[in-house]
Length: 556
Image 1 (cartoon, rainbow, N blue to C red):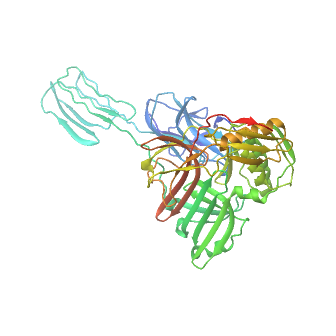
Image 2 (image 1 turned 90 degrees about the vertical axis):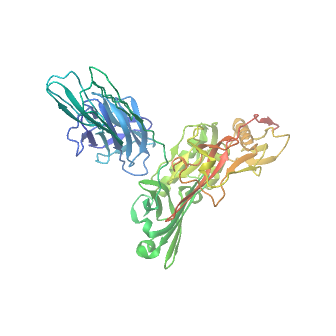
Image 3 (image 1 turned 120 degrees about the vertical axis):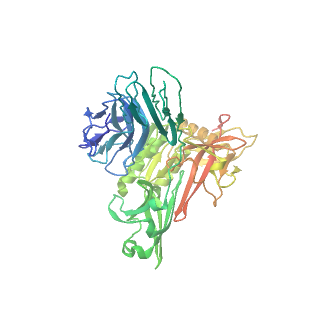
């Protein structure tokens, strides 16, 4: 069989919400035997090979993923983000099989995948054919697709054999006299290969080798850390490589604004640092080709040897934005309400990354807002009381609740210190009275006979049904003694912990296993300290509590 490869030719618009086959490809350089039919690689023979692929996008803020599909139905490997190379080793194919590249757009709007050699799909053959022949007429047949070296030297009446087989380790099998024989060698790496001879079997040798790969987390290196300096709309001012920095510290938080702190070496680029202006310029932290944090510069402290830069993520603009619209949302999930005002905030401040809106998982409410009546963060606080979850990742809002299925599993060995469990009742209330525009309602949730009271004001929520739903929801959420798994501030995840930055997003669920119990936790805070000495990742995990008994409404 032959190795094949193809590059995307011509831009293609990808609508949001579903996997789409990319079309329009040409032969990639270095793969002359490529066979492309209907924008897919078509295999000419059966065999095995390694798949490599990548998808490109116009802007790094566009949320596009790419995957490889066999015969139009079977997904191979795992999807990768745009500009991230993907690899699928040891794929077995048959003659006539097709391999195609698909894209998924998770934005609100259609996005362009440009025609570019950075969007490609290749299949590199790893099997080899080793034909063998003998004369005169010998009644046997040998074929091999493993790496075997053999010499065949027939005599006039009898056949004398010298057989040498190397499978990873050196091993020799030799005979010098006429014998009947059969040799079998099995090497399992996703497919079995057999070598046999007839007619008479006088002896046999077999060897089985099975290769199992342990999944490992992505390696993170300080040398791969880059900080880009730019405007909100992406116009570049410059960049700080790892050699120009002493340290970088960044974080992610649930329902809070996160901070990035950069310690730069002034003398590496004093003119670049002198040009930095708060709010005008942004910083984006990159790990390899992936942006992990982005936000607006808040403060620059210039020194002769060290310059310190402090930036806040996109959420900080809620404290610089008045409620942007007068509107009443009728029976709508709080996530959708938040998405509409965040989009208006982004437009006001020239922020190009649209929010990611997760599927609705909470109650619907009728909510009213009046433009310029208060600050946007106050409105978002109201929506949080109605069930909204939000965070910011790489400068982009994520609105809504993630699915409850865990995205990773950690054990005690994945932490460098002993885990601490804290039972926290400082934010516990089970007797809640909610006051809206034209109604007030009290809800009580059972909690060991306690009556821990609080008063909640929702000035922009009106109607009896809305106030009742809000009071029940708030009582059930706060009527619990929280169990918190805490990593001390000076501790970190083990460098070999089987978790990556894409798993460490506030709101996602992680299963933590200790000797005593396995606990579902939700990521609340992430803090990463990076420097020449390595990475220190600190995580705050909150145990997912069970709702228990349903709250009941009492009085009005």
